[in-house]
Length: 244
Image (cartoon, rainbow, N blue to C red; front, side, top):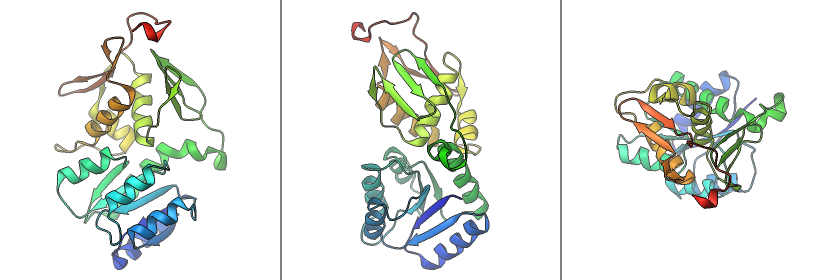
């Protein structure tokens, strides 16, 4: 069973949402204040698999809660916002949210998004249900341990969100080949991209910053305009990255 926490000040909305999720087999807790929610999560009162976070909260707004959680924990976070302001959604994704939904939304879409995030992050809790995936991927100076979900650049550990890890895994496995934005959205985010959905691009922008845009003078993640992205393979093995 997966454990979810809803942080939203709309009590009626929370109860309806919680009922929908419980019917699907999730264990759901609810808090209505941003400051209380942050303190509750950081104190470890609940071992949550996913947090559903509203942006318009009393006590402390959703961005502040998101920032506070991300500074300490890697718990997946799905933003919920009543605003149609694209910059709000982009800001949330850049701050480390895994995905977002604009209110009002269809409960079935919420459940699909929740399941997509939990599938993506399931390896963190593999000990509960089975054996984690094994294996390593090495491309240039990047080494990814799939079992432990550990990513290192020249031996230095990188702090990636769950969705950034999944995007990087997909790109590294297809290194040298184009992966379309649609493939990334459907495989990782669990949905079909709409015309103005920039979620993939925002996550890739954050991933580039964390990896470093170039390796040995080569752009790591190249944008293929109108199509998708490709992770570049170094032309020859590099024995000492300090020489780059």
